[in-house]
Length: 449
Ligand SMILES: *Cc1c(COP(=O)(O)O)cnc(C)c1O
Image (cartoon, rainbow, N blue to C red; front, side, top):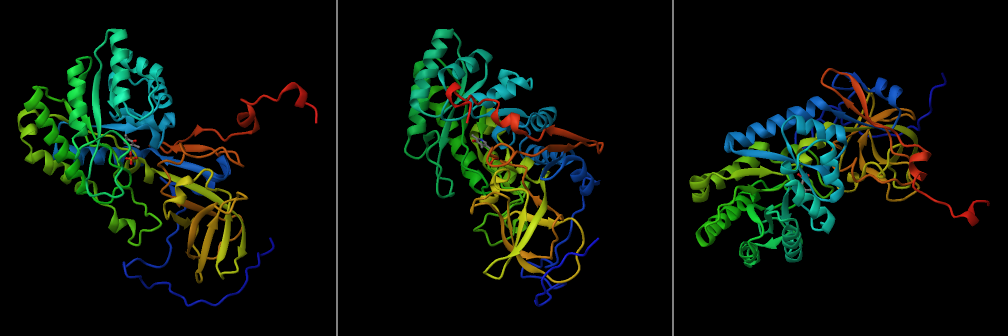
């Protein structure tokens, strides 16, 4: 085979030295996922390819539940569907004992399809439609109320159905995380949340079972969860004292950060991302201090998504071509773009080669195949000299990609799961033209061109 030509360049060889975080400046390569060779996966299932590790998903789930239960045994996780609602992935969490947290009628239907009972579904989201509320009330799901008009609508529906539904109030609050997410639920500090509870209890058409905050996502300050729990428990105590109503649960939402790094973040993930213990301790401290907890032992609910699945997902992608940019940087065109890896817009994902390389590194930008300037997978990082046809691993990509991906310009690729036995299962097939056009209709007069 003819050797490929790569242009000569001179660069100081930094191999072996370390940066200020004591990171080796040599990239380690990854040639397998859970001992399955990456070359075989690509040969069998094509490129690009999403790969999920069942072993990693289960291990992470058990680790997080262990750590939380060590702090407070009466706790449980509701899996956040929008983070990754592939049926196979959700089913793993449900097998592990997770309940379901849904933010739309579509996600609600997905949870029901997988056999989750209504009583194990939390129905969140600011845009619940009347028919979706009817279904949820009939099924005995728990509705988390976002605003007053929704509260009135649920009252009306419950009245019509003659059912008293179990509900929680969603609350937003200052936890030291800015910009504050104020658009969901009722505000804590200005008393709106308390008044919503008062209105709900006066109506006597619903049973208030919980108080809920989801303060945001990729929260790097673990201590903010102390304030979430502390303020919710204070409100629970007030509700007990003023209305003699005891809520069953305190729901601190999701938002734990994964081992990823925001573009603006200078510190690497391994130093910036709090450990599970730090998050759990922040919540546990608030619970330990609380009189409401001593007297009523409410359930602690987490609606975790990102941290459970992000690192269990990998994107394999082949190098289509290479070029030099006028900036002096090397550019690599991958066959995976932001159409399938949309979180590349927010995070500096790790890109790793799948074979060892000798020689020096050059600043390399990774683009996708889309004819769009925004199709940037990874801003410049020092990288060895890849050849066309080489495969790279982009990670972590398990959270928010196989849900937010777009049907745009290209077909979406195969998604596979490496099971605990090492068996490789396709959990979502690569799309083809029929999938993309199956819902289209061309009017009669346009059929001939
Ligand atoms: C998205 C979402 C979650 C999950 O958030 P992560 O950051 O993925 O953990 C939990 N609760 C609600 C209400 C959400 O909207």
